[in-house]
Length: 287
Length: 196
Ligand code: SF4
Ligand code: SF4
Image (tube, rainbow over all chains, first blue to last red; front, side, top):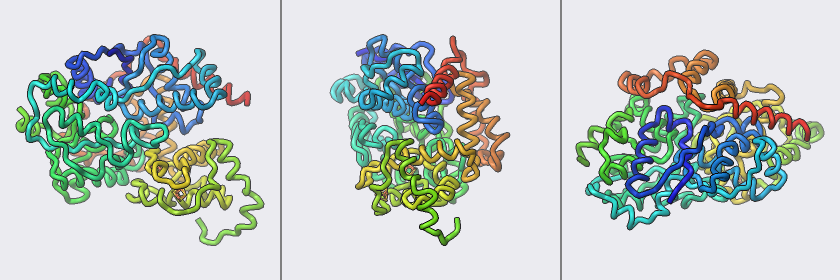
């Protein structure tokens, strides 16, 4: 399998642990990644508020490069993924908009490249194949899979999995030997970029999610989105101060656990240093 | 917002608001029957991030309360999580309506509903137009300088987290072969929208 890889800004900046672990998992599973040359930002979270066309044309600029290469896209950031999915949605439903986007990017966009998230991209490989690649099963580790909103809502456009109770990430956690805890806030919103505008509201939103995962008995929360990761991981101390709580649950990318189970070292994928919440307790449990 | 609204005046003067929202985003807010399901699941609203609940925003459009709705914090605070859209029994894409209202407010220079959000979007767009990709360090500095009351809002993340973030954050702008790609796309979009 070969994908056009669209890492997006976060994975090249703060969230290198995601970039590295995605690449590591793909390598373990024999998936080849071709990084879209000179890709640009997808425009989230502001392009679409400037105008409908701007919001579509900016992600189309990078998407069209994958189309020309004849490859489907793998976009591990939920926001990037959804912006690109919207482009294909409009291109296939609205001929007038298709023409406008093509004019704006000065190239014809056809909508021929499917956009995979890292969740359905890896799940498509099959749970058996994932299980076969495991060298160190994470037996006994209780994992709360947190999907966030952008992969599953609105379901007409973003349908990686069920909008209220998705399962794919849970299944992958089971495939690497971990225990998937059943919990209700899998797709509750973390607040996304509201963190740059209204910190009080956003930490209250993130707190609800962390609290529920802890109540469900999880040892670790795994995410598939850099914004979710940042809001849950980086704000733990702030949440504890504000709500007089005492949460110390690590928040990492699900691909980090997969890569680790498949033989990567924590250092190779950033599992040791790429998070604020501290992963020592997690590492001592799985090492 | 005043608590008494003269509906006859609203309808006479702004009765076409619902049509203009439709023209902007293709969502027909007439369909909303005010069940409130959107608000019941809206995490931003539940955590007190909105001044008017999402279903009330829909109602204000139906009633032609144009000035009031364009001045709300809610139209900017919506994070487009689409939980409401997933659950709306009338198939209304609430965040697309919110986006349409932002675009309308922006065109008229109304940003006081949620100044820090409007500043964020401006700075974000300027950053990617200039660099082609997000330059987070530069973005953060500009935000702190221009927003009101957020200068120290991130300090409570604690010293270990601040050190970790400072370590991970790239200090220099992203390197690209052609960093003017977004600038060109945005200019083209403005021209195309102007032609219509
Ligand atoms: S859920 Fe839909 S119909 Fe119900 S109040 Fe909200 S927008 Fe209106
Ligand atoms: S899309 Fe906006 S209005 Fe709807 S639930 Fe999310 S934040 Fe609330």
